[in-house]
Image (cartoon, rainbow, N blue to C red; front, side, top):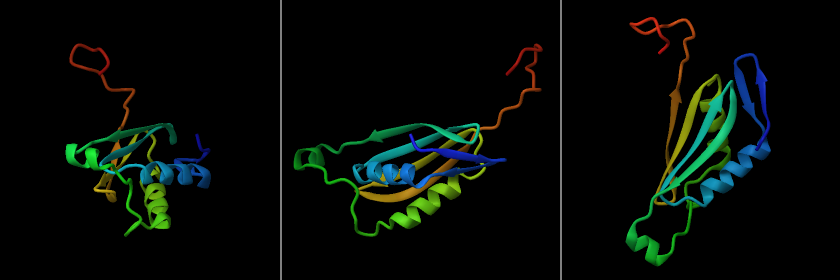
Length: 120
């Protein structure tokens, strides 16, 4: 997996990882690619592909080059990962087009306890 350099609370993803990610997105027609982070590092990449029966029979083409700007996608992914200690970035693809980027933040609290005194 690509190197992620930690600078205080900021993760910077190297270009080889971003190129591999673009390659994975280009193979996705309907679905999502999720980048899971822990301690400001991308620790897992998940890909979920959805299939429409008619398109499956016709053969899927993958991400459409029309309207796909690799530099803009890289910038948006880096922005979404910036400062994300625990969580995930989800890239949504519909009909071969990147249509949405979601950023999910998970916050951990070591000093919180449940009603019975046990941890959450």
